[in-house]
Image (cartoon, rainbow, N blue to C red; front, side, top):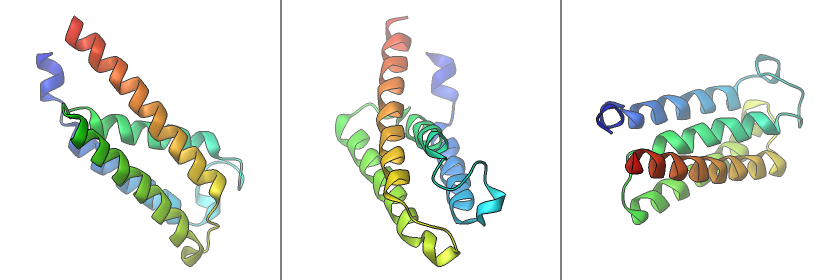
Amino acid sequence: MKYFDRVNSDVLALILAAIILGLSLSPQAATLGAEHQDGWQHLLAYGLLTGAAIFRRRDVQGTLLILAAIIVYGGVIEVIQPMAGRVGDFRDFAANLAGVTLGLIVMTAVKQVVRSG
């Protein structure tokens, strides 16, 4: 567990959030995949963001607050995308939610394995 205590997952989460924002507001040609076919990218991005953000959280209340913040963050990005020449899409937001859920499940399992080992 000592190695995992040294990992600064909060900094990683902030970097991932900045990358997500940059890619979400950049012109469509600069991102991978065709419009409305990038759900797996949303799933992966928000899964990684969630995993990094909750990695060091030990209390349920703090974890729930982080999850709510990430969900709102993803929703706000979808709302402001049209102002950046992109298209906000409910399917993308749904993929964000799926990524948050996946990140929570995977990181909870990782924490259990690390604590038991």
